[in-house]
Length: 352
Ligand code: MRU
Image (tube, rainbow, N blue to C red; front, side):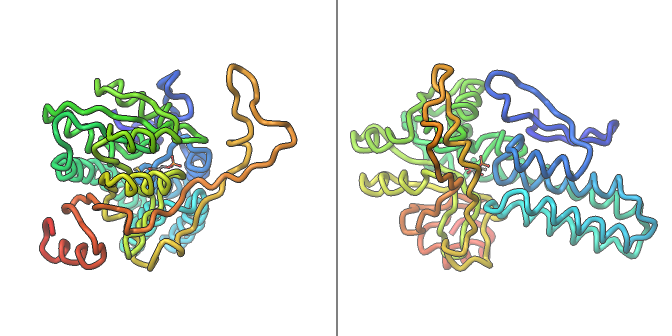
């Protein structure tokens, strides 16, 4: 079962509605680029690679429903829908990466017919979806070598099958280690305020039969300090050219606590998450979401914050590259210094 899947007979994109989990495994069908942009904004679909692939299908829907009579008109329709999709969330670079790639394919088919462009855009979205699954499995195979039998791992946010098309990034590494027969145990950061860890990662680990305990985000330092954790695994929404890592809010504090306790901190990201146009983390746009996500929290059916309270709600933070022990990619493991070793790895076509 994929997080998102094209329904050819209905001409629709089918998504797992991540807002309903873990209470209900509910699917929704989207039939326009506008609906896809809304689903990305509202985090019905979330996770950097998943929103990139969803946006590519959004363009396929835009092409399908466009009334354009010429390829020029269709390309112009696609560009305006691309702007709508791109604006849905600013931090994950995979969103713009998938949109740009799909637009390139559309432009490449401009010498053909309107129907040719429609077909090529849909094919490209399907290709990106299949490539994502393949990429995750490759990263997981490299990353699993970092996990030993009996390890306890701290994991932040949700980086499993739900954050991608299938399998997962950081959680994919946990899954591969488990499939290799290693006994692993996961401490799942609940991940305030949207609780991707408590709701989604816990659900996925339960489905996979991997032992876990949910911890409050602030408890991570305690377990690291007590020597009860062997490694930290996170994903990433955008990695700058120098290796600085934008990921779910709370990642930076976790990286600091890992460094203070000399525990390796690994970031599992596909190469599509590296933004070579961002020299360092200060250039990465950080999404600030509605304060209601922080303020309208209910415990035992009661709102916990004063009615007049105000809140700040950055959805991501930046972890400086020097706190990352290594980056796990689909081409192998990159150690510091990031830029030089990444270039080396790409030139070799394998691990550095
Ligand atoms: O706000 P979200 O839930 O979309 O944030 C997701 C994350 O931060 C993940 O850790 C990240 O996308 C990498 S996992 C594929």
